[in-house]
Length: 112
Image (cartoon, rainbow, N blue to C red):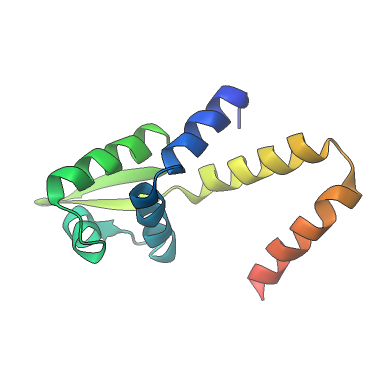
């Protein structure tokens, strides 16, 4: 994460229920992703509304799109997510491992 402005832009893209649901869905379907129509259908959101949400997430760098024939497949950018989490932990804990330790333990538990 480059700076506070990037973190704010990234977090603000997720600060809307439908966009957060889209991102969660794409993370669960990583690394293959989903076509835009499947994302819209899974979340019962009209295609034109979904297009706006996908655009916001894309501009924030949280998702990527790839054209496959006539459809566009969206994937979560897990590297960007990792940089955001690392930025928050590093910035907020300010090098004090005892503050971050409980958070890190939760992240490690995700691996199991």
